[in-house]
Image 1 (spheres, protein in one colour):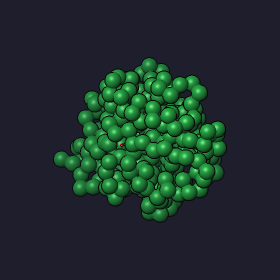
Image 2: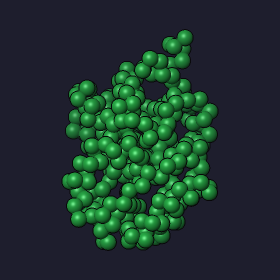
Image 3: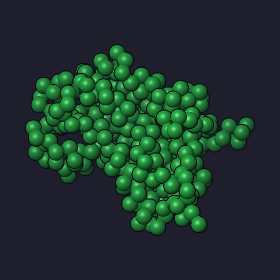
Length: 280
Ligand code: DGL
């Protein structure tokens, strides 16, 4: 048989989580995935944590109704807002969440100065405070919320004037302070690594957490004997905005075998995610 061929649910406020999905596909080629981009609400970063928790719960309920065997919260902001709550609410489901990779950064820095790029909500959450408390003693963390960068990436603008201005404003003062390591604490940001690297230079290390998250997901499934052995895994994409919007960006960010994937629409209805047909 095909092992446990139920899908793995993956979600983000938008296309950022595709950086995680890309690593998941490479690590787990036999798995089926369902990806939900909550583009009706992107960006999550400036919103109150309670509001983001509500979105994360609605998405989780939808993924479970589609038979998800595990859920990867491919969004630092939603993890900050809801990881703990979701684990408590759905104890039978394994959740893999994101936290800024301060630990490896603190281990690797030579100068003791680390830059962290994440959303305001991520910086406010308890998860970040606990990571800093546990792993960043003796390390200076310089934080920046890169306001507007998520919106640029959502539009597929990965190296234009606007993302360049935002990243230069964030990173140049950090460089002046001696930063030698940058943590990408938002899953949208791996898509602008070439621009970041151009600004900070070759000698600054940029930490992309996606391979570690993919390995963690594999470990969690293996532990539960829930890996799929299906011959070829698949991905189903959903968005809560107009599919055309995500389609345009997908053509920049998702080049798997050169094929453009189908994207289906979901709508929010009284705090629940439903298909447009159900809502009518
Ligand atoms: N990609 C997300 C994160 O990792 C969310 C960004 C946003 O919607 O503000 O935080």
